[in-house]
Image (tube, rainbow, N blue to C red; front, side, top):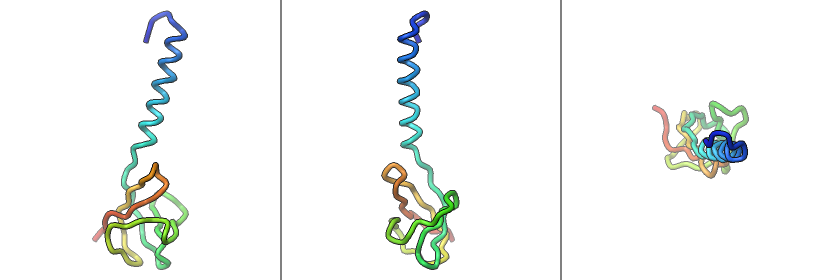
Length: 85
């Protein structure tokens, strides 16, 4: 940052915070979940199940399966990418 220039320092801080916020918002980690008997998806880190039809899958799953999920579309959707055995 520029020493002694409060306006430039403030602008730099705002730009760095905005960039940091966007980077954090775009990085999503895999989560574990369980397919319930009604075929909803209960994620380990979210208390409410995701109803059947509101999540996607790349593997065949059945009730009771433990699964690995990736959030997509800015975290708005989940895709089951694998089953735990």
